Length: 109
Image: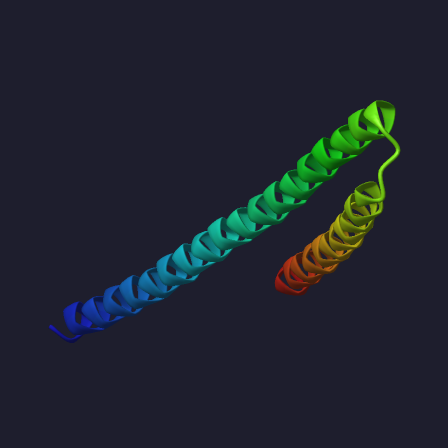
């Protein structure tokens, strides 16, 4: 009878440990999903900025060919502003990726 109780306690401990491992794995999966979504979002926002910049540059080129206008300076300033946003976005991407890489390394240790 006492052996049966000891076996049951041992099995309960094993079940509890397995449940903890499952919870840890589920948490890791959720964190990984969030990381993937974050990286995808960062890449998408950078791509959108690059597309907007290319469109503006194309418009500026067409306008310059059509006529030399003072309005173009405003568009060129806007283009420079987009370049700054792109640079900042790329810096954020790198910082975020470095953060996730550090987290991943820390979890492996």
